[in-house]
Length: 98
Image (tube, rainbow, N blue to C red; front, side):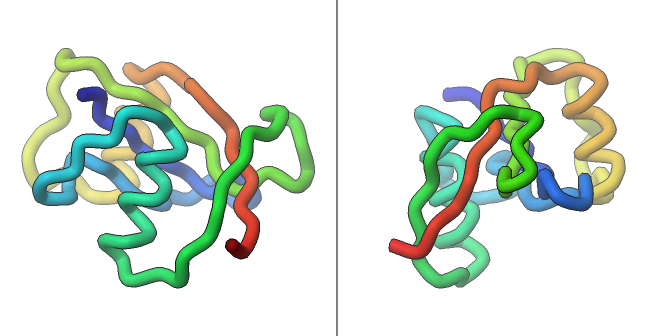
């Protein structure tokens, strides 16, 4: 399954990386956001798709392929920069309480 790196759409900061979650195997960008919420102990919420330029968007989701490899122990900022440089923007999500 793909590896996803998520960034906060409002401030551009790192939100999470499914590659850091043991046993995570998300099949979609929404599955990735849900897996990160569970792993971080966040309250359950739902996600829907939004336009990338939407002022209400919550998360930008990047998909990473197997190469080039992200170094083990990379910081949050390095991980996000790597995803933006080598990954593909696959979705913009908006969150809502479920």
